[in-house]
Amino acid sequence: YENSSDGILIAELKSKRFKYANSAICRMLGYPMDELLTLSVDDIHPKRSLNRVLSEFTAMAKEKGRLAKNIICIRKDGSQVYADVFGTAKKVGTHTYVLGVFRDASDRKQMEDKLQQIRDEAEKKVMDQTEALEKRIRRLLKDRTKDSRPDRVLLGDGDKYRILIETMNEGLCIVDEDRIITFVNATFCRMLGYSSQETVGSLLDNYVSQSDRKILMEQHARRVQGGQVPYELTFVKSNGEEIITLISPKPVFDETKTYKGAFAVVTDISELKRKEKILAEREEELSAKTRNLEELNNALKALLQRRDEDRVEMEEKVILNVRRLIVPYLEKLKETGMNSRQLAFVRILEESLADIISPFSRTLSTKFVSFTGSEVKIANLIRQGKRTKEIARLLGISKRTVEAHRDHIRTKLGLKTSKGNLRTHLMSIQ
Image (cartoon, rainbow, N blue to C red; front, side, top):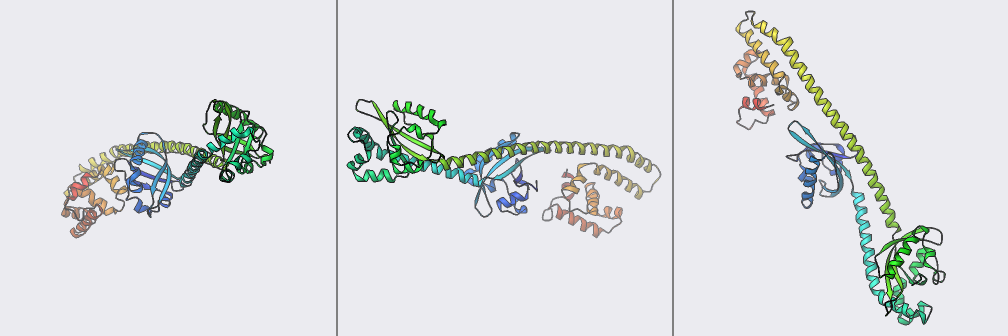
């Protein structure tokens, strides 16, 4: 976990408080580890996205493995970072913990937003320019038989329309009912690397890639029926390079509703498609890493399960050996005519052995790792009901030393400012 390049957080399901954080997640969120472990799931996500975050958190606790994309996280300095979070759950004792693996997705999210912005802008330009051009191009097609040069018709209709068409950022192409090109603007010519003299009068199919000519034929049939849904088409430039375009078509009919041709606004989306390809490759890479993570998680679960089984087996062996090899000799020792002080020591040994194989001492040595050996002994005796004077006599130390140890134990258990009974609290520790 510490060597992982992805951030890892483990939270308790019920409280949603963090119990573990690796170095990578600390760097991602800008928190020192001790401070991050005082926070909960609610603290690292903006309020507006909490409903989704908590829903995903709950789902991760129920499913074997779940991936949530573009989760917004709040860094310590208030800035935002997007993350893809792979989550899974593990039950330990009576508690369920959710493990989340955080992968920084900010670059991908930024690219997605940029791609969507490009799409939106392209669609808006097409809509605005198509509306302005539709009436003028209808007239152009109608007057085509009077003058074979569309540029003269445009000039005759007004210089402002000629300027609009020639300076627009998108290409414009007009074809007749047989897909013969009757007009192209300067942008379309730059896209393909041909002049208007080379293209006007030729078949549109000649400039479309072989693989997309079937698409062109299908779209031509739809245009005859009045269809005008945008579609993608690949053209071949004069240098042999292919460009991917978005075609926004508009069919034209005469007064008798006879199809006379169509015009289309042509937008170069080659860069957009390139970015989409990069994004798809990153998605595939993420999916592969997610699958590897699932396999790693399954292996980890198997190891944890085996460790739990080994621990239970060891505890059972210890308990069996204590009862078989030690307890019988303590019973015989009590029958040897010991004095009262020696008998008290034997009873303490019996009770201490019982405590050693109980959860209490293990808890003191793991959860309360700061306890000294003397404090563990005295805590055991207090739990057994022994008073200060009796503990001092049994351990051969002064009452003041026992009282000092009791004071340290209360401090380490968080009872320093409380009036709670120390023995009652020790007996509650499991």
